Length: 583
Image 1: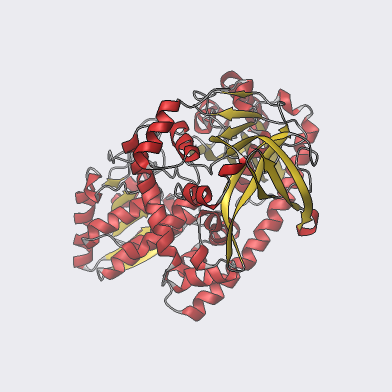
Image 2 (image 1 turned 30 degrees about the vertical axis):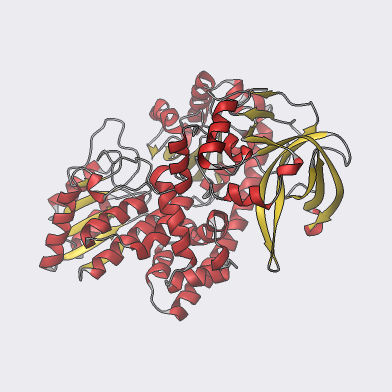
């Protein structure tokens, strides 16, 4: 088994005063240098708004329209990042006394981004300055049309530029295009920086929106994103926005205990639901309202819509899994393209994400309607560039866009079969068996004596966890499970983990009582270690990720190979994954 360099681990222990397990984690995550490790733990990377090349032009243009009292429209998007970035800019412009309104596209009638029809409508209702949020970096023709109709345009976005490299003829605020030191910002973070320039100070009261959007948009929680999300979660815990307080209430999220998981699985889905099934304006109104009663009404409506969204998701997933079964041997297909009648275009992206995670290969779902279909896809594994795949199959598509991990498309019904074959062939040419094999990360090897509150609290210092900074995976090589008891009507289990040097309490979620090994059988297993709070008591708790008989899996160094997102629970019946030890 590959090992961390002992000298590097010992050096971090000595220089930072951290435990051996935490030092292992830092070394295996490429933070062996004490200065880099210290900076990561501190999470204080921050850059000035002036680091965006050309942002001064955008700021001057907006201020000129504010002073002239002309109508400014902020055009956002229908997801959490689009709604939050719109809210940040509208709030900043209101503080400046601007005549500002907004426009959020409808997923069904407008489609993604800035459309020609929208440009014409905005010009007709008197918009003189159009500021985009989370869209329009590829809207070259639409921006030209807006200018032809007498509007000035500012483009703020973070999405990939067009394949041909052509940019809109307008001032642009974009982390990649403008050479910002951290290219990974979400659109709301970009809007936050633009608002900072407009106001002359950082709008710290909107850090809650930056955290919400960054987590929902699954941007890497590294660099400045890590700083913004950590500070933003603190801001969210104490937010004075009636809408966010109401949203936490209906989602049963305790503000004092809010973290990245409660944002990702409780708040973001409800805020997203309106834009997926109907219009996203309700989410924006929720954020902007100062009326607690109105906030409560909207929050309950979003909660209801989210239940509706979940029901639609279950139906589509059931039908999609049936289509996969009809295709035959799944192992023979390197990419899955599935099409169905009556599928809601706002939900297929979620289902594609679930299927891609399960099957570990690219998945595109297409909602058919008449002669056309609209699709949403996910890459399925880090080795696959979905946008490159769509580009290679572009002759079959009416239009498409997105990025490496996720993308959308429009296609003629008669071309679906050809597109499915072409994408499968492209995936076959670039993916290896190792790319799609399920893997299990290991960040540190520990024994029972180390699994206490001290280590749990120390590991929590690496939060926020998410894309780019997954929860810490601890390997116990000599373990046995005892006192296994069912929880949650048999869906979950609680048990005791015994290993040399001690024992610890553990749980396994959503396993149906299957732990991967029999009670008392020698095993090796991976866990996360968390601080569990219940009825005012805090204690360390292990959460099972994967378990198998001792000596069964192969543990190897795969540091040069992209690995999967964290697995939840033990291996499926398809067989246990490799345990991968970063080194």
